[in-house]
Amino acid sequence: MAYFLKKTKLKGRTYLAIYESFYNPEKKETAHKCYKSLGSIQALIESGIEDPIAHFQKEVDYLNKKKKEAGVRKISDKSPMRYLGYFPLKSIMEKLKINRYIDLFKLTNDFQYDLFQLLSTLIYARSVNPCSKNKTFHEVLPSLYESYDFSYDQLLDGLAFLGSNYNKIIEIFTTQVKATYGIDTSKTYFDCTNFYFEIDREDDFRRKGPSKENRKDPIVGLGLLLDSNQIPIGMKIYPGNESEKPILRDVIEQLKKQNNIVGKTIHVADKGINCVNNIAYLKKNGDGYLFSKSVKTLPEKEKVWVLLDKGFKEVRDSKGKILYYYKSCVDKFPYQIEHNGKKKTINLTEKRLLIYNPTLAAKKRHEIKRMVEKAKLLTVSQAKKNDFGEAGKYVNFIDANGKKAVMEINQTAIDNDFKFAGYNLLVTSEIQMNDLDIYNTYHNLWRIEESFRIMKSDLDARPVFVQKQESIKGHFLICYLTVLLERLFQFKILEDKYSASEIFDFIKGFKVTKAEHKYINTTTYSDFIDDLSHLFGLPLTNYFLTETQIKSILNYKL
Image (cartoon, rainbow, N blue to C red; front, top):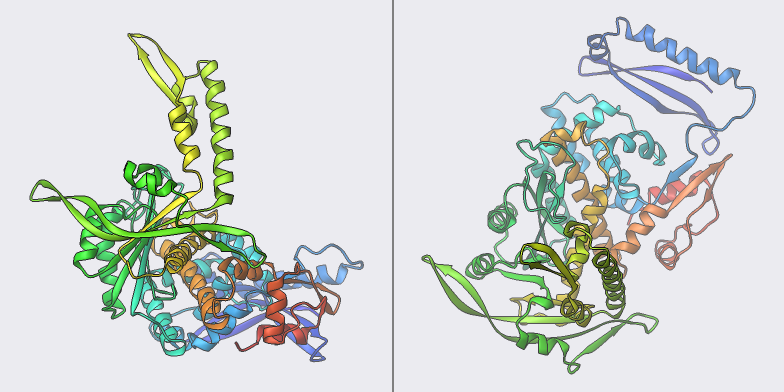
């Protein structure tokens, strides 16, 4: 088999690509796949290549010569491993018929590549191995089972186009999800987060603001609107210097208007919404809230309730192990608001859900002991105040009349942290909401936000392509769509019987390695993959897989 230079005419232009021919043992015939996409002849001439056809024909001749001279088998520079775990996302994409709408962009744009292929392969690549776009193109895409036909420059160009039209792309997906699977907007949820960029200076989009990691780097904010099942139905990206507290009101309003939603929206957050102005706005607008609150900052009366052993219920896993204890109460709680320049106290009726996690408590106590030991050692050595770091909260620094400051261990702070280790308090306006629904809703939203953080990964190409606002938006669009497809798989196909972490572990872990004319399934066994194999009737647990079996997996209709 050999390499050859393929010429394709499209819209009056000629495009070049190097293709590789090979023997397909299943079909018992010669097949072809793209080895390298080169672009249009006109673009290549403009880049300085005088005769592109002659230039790349020499490269083809060299590749064929190299292949012919290889008398012995050597270690390949291409990995024989192939990712297959993205097949559920591929099936959902095909069921949504997204391609028919994405292809319409071709009517007004002179693309030199297939935009839907670029979009879908970026989603699949992000689901199996989230990394920089450079690494995605050169390492992850070649390890997807199906081939692609675009260059790295075209990838960046397509990403920027998708980013500049991200609202339209999301609208297409939301409309198709609604038509295919249905969307429940009787109650919607809103969450927001931000992402930092390791760049020296701000630009018009990446601005310094209130980062959740307390970093000084420029950040970008992201707001998410989700339906009753926490399936994403809208996303808004905004400059990082705009505080979440005032902007979230505008973001919620825009997302609801864009998606024709008139029902109640519940804003779910860690501690970001803990602002009385936001709470008052949500109440006035007929919306609600659900946020976490530190038990250590509660008034003494509420702390007494926290530490009372009475009223707790327990939640166990399938093996009988205690996961957490919980109890709740509904009462009126005071908030101070500013009205006409004066502070005023108002009482809001809320439900408060207290959770005690024994595993988390043990972990927290271990961390406290470690920091206390560090504080004691630094105190003995009379270290500088800034050397203590987080351990400094367990030390009192007392000025001694102009002399060297005296340092002493703050035993009260240590005892307080030990006492409240493992407790978490959730506060909500939804007093009729079931306790476990409150817990699950909060943690589902947290997992979605965590998915974005994990999928953001290391933006290795930071100084290169993410300097463009459109490329940043394109990147987060890909993350959003990956999470959307995962949530559809979790809720609409698997009926919420499995967690997001189990699903993503499968998507990332299900891979095969080519050996001669068959494939070896190198995936680690799990109950999830066994269940999936029986549910779909697919050979997901087989050790050996043929080309036919792999195609049956990738072409499976959910």
